[in-house]
Amino acid sequence: MTRFWNVLNNIESYLCRALLVMFVALLFTQIVSREMFGHSFSWIEELSVYMFVWFVFFGASYAAKMSAHNRVTFQFGMLPRSWIKWIEGFADLFWIAFNVYFVYLAGDFVFNKMNKFWKSQTLGIEMKWIYMVLPLAFTLMTVRIIQVNYLKLFKGIDVKDPDKIDLDDFKSDKDA
Image 1 (tube, rainbow, N blue to C red):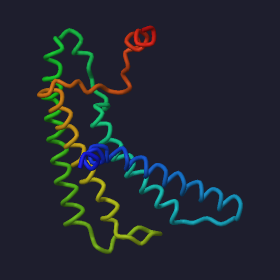
Image 2 (image 1 turned 90 degrees about the vertical axis):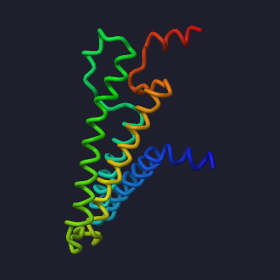
Image 3 (image 1 turned 120 degrees about the vertical axis):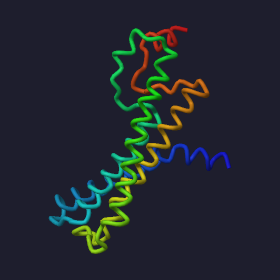
């Protein structure tokens, strides 16, 4: 059961890794086929683009989980640290509201407004399966924003952006 929750907690990471490997392998196959055999597969180009789009949206959700989205933070320099997490949490309420509204609009578009006969040009699959990434990724992103704020505000766990490593801490760890 623990393994199941671990996989679920890292689903974006696994999806992004799988999508990256698959669309790079497809593009490599396309290049080899075109250069060595003088033949290209039109469906590879289209599928690779769709996989890349899914990669980007699930990557955005993963960034929300890692608290790695860009923020304007210069105004926090003179505030106490305890205030910052609450102000960021309040700002995230607007982000959540946007995501919920976007999920509603995307779901309405995919399920109610898309024509069943809209199909991808070379793959021939219904476009609603391609556009499903929108409500899925934004729902998952909303869950991750709530998860990060719960950890920060109620559990006291500071979820730090992995790109913001304090070099002084890193250096002192190496010296020890």
